[in-house]
Length: 316
Image 1 (cartoon, helix red, strand yellow):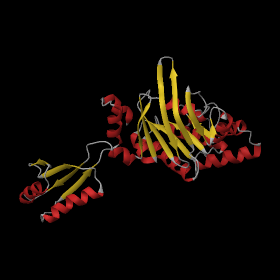
Image 2 (cartoon, helix red, strand yellow):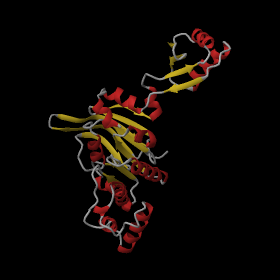
Image 3 (cartoon, helix red, strand yellow):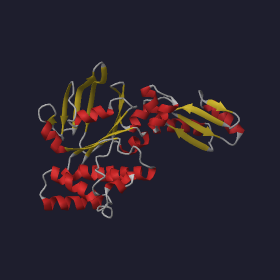
Image 4 (cartoon, one colour):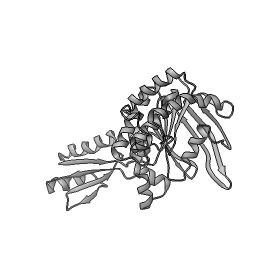
């Protein structure tokens, strides 16, 4: 069994009287996407800065790529890449020149640096724009160049701090595909995001950070099952069948106008079989069955305790 790509035990960080990270524990397996969710100011970026050696923790046992951050920071830096919230692209030079600059910073021989730059520019569909100033690039192109620059050193672990903020839906979906391809290639991705759909689409595991602590952690499905509100809705066209179904399924909520029944359910196969079994026993067939399970929006608002319209808009 391989060692985790990232582990944190008791990670703490304060700035003055403000505790930003209050003893959090994280484990990120190799070759996976780990998403850290949380409202603005929750400490997501601080966690990334600490795990990428940019900021020193106040306390905690922290290991990245098998190295202790406190004693082997240089080895950690050699194994990781970081793409922050704000682009590191220099708009005054071309995309190719940005790439070659990164190759120089990684001490690659000139010929190898040019080869790596050309391969990455092609991989990220930037070859045609390579000779143009990066200031002329769209937001999505700059983000692709940002990640291409991060990959010059062939990192095993990449920290992506809100990589799709400000991108239009098409560019965001393009970035998702890039992240999936990175993981298929064996890279571990530590992702922070405010877009709940993004975490749902990409992450193997998700942690929700709130008030400096991990409020919950698990797969998207595991987190959704923790939140009440799941239900099954049965609709009938025959009023007689509707009435019989209501008798056969005690505890349901009736909607007599729509001839529909609603009952609490986690949406599991076992529960659905039980519901349909009762209807079969009574000789009743529903015209329509729909299952609603809580989504990550429900999880986020339940765990962070903020259901204001502003918070909902931020999290989308």
